[in-house]
Image (cartoon, rainbow, N blue to C red):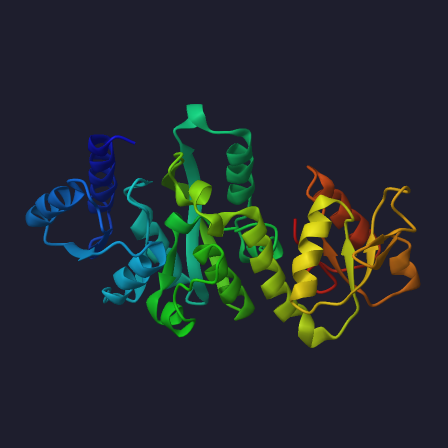
Length: 327
């Protein structure tokens, strides 16, 4: 993006926050080592609005910038967004109201609308649709090992809980997904305002597309790490559903995390009877013959998750308790 466009984008993002209908809030902006005239734009905005507080820091990356910004916040409720996104004028008011009315909620998101629409790829459109279909805590908890069920720039959370959970961490994978997985592991609750309150810019320079921490392989590492921690206390035998590419990739990371996989289920008769990573590939009848297994469904093809869920539920298995979808 040309420098003048980047600066105009930042100004538009800041103005969208300053137009919020919430009466009392402060805007903390962390400039992570900008080398254009963005600091001048920010100083001009701050000079005209005493709600704006600026933090200028040498470039150290998003995790340091996020933690620095939140450390500077005084309020109990903290919302965040990126410098190229746009917030609906009622965003903060509606999210704050939800969290005040539901004190059990730790993280509040909203529906999102990606833009510019004309350049969205099919995968992004599908992700937006999936994301916006997950409205309740149960929806988000059910699918948290499939993908991140929350758009990072759309969130509001309780500052004290965030600090108690250790803030943002660099684990070599996406810092936001890691945070939601830690909230989930701690038994915290999620919610969404069922309105599009965040307009989420998709551009080639986004970290999601450029930083290796956001690669599929590192997402799988994150899933395996938290799945292993969740599975360990149960002591139940683990069965992986999926001997295809996704199953092979996630099984590698699960095994590295110390998860012992008893069997791999697949519907392809050509695979049944063979092995994957030394584990026998079997039909779904294995579950009838070996009750008590905990199943991880890891098939990436479109529509497979729905079919596997239906089959497992038909067998009397309960999602979260007896099986988890991880793709």
